[in-house]
Length: 184
Image 1 (tube, rainbow, N blue to C red):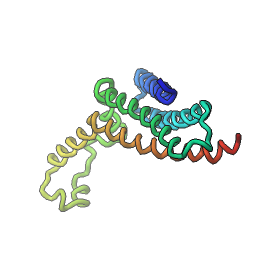
Image 2: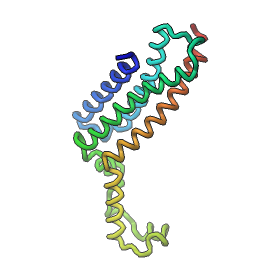
Image 3: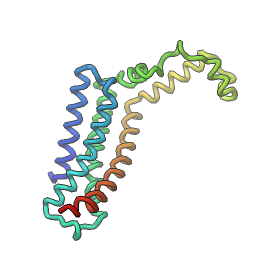
Image 4: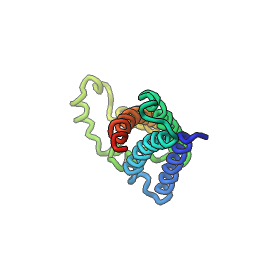
């Protein structure tokens, strides 16, 4: 196994352990933002350490093309992202299937008794003209169920993390070539 895969696997498993520890402590919903930030930090570290160890192996900045570095950084970020998205699918479907509902409740999204249907209908008169309050609440419940689907959530996370991985890879390669290479 090459160093790119090892680095991505180590950070991916570390994030999974952190997420499971937080879940077992009972703070999965409250510390969601913290685990998301740790995840983004780990993605950045995976990309950075991949480039760093690539340089230690003897790849010289002058001899290696920019796109080759970008490809290696994206490879590491993609491996980490696939590990992350696979775990998120398992987490939302088997480990904590009520996470999305609990998160929506914490944010105050699920509270049908607090909905002022007349005010909502006044904002969207054309869209809601034939709906009763009960029909509107039923449709909103179906929408919430769709967005609480583990497959949809993990797919959105996968797409988002791939875009962030591309962005981080690009910035890290530029930073490594322009800043860190001048310090050596």
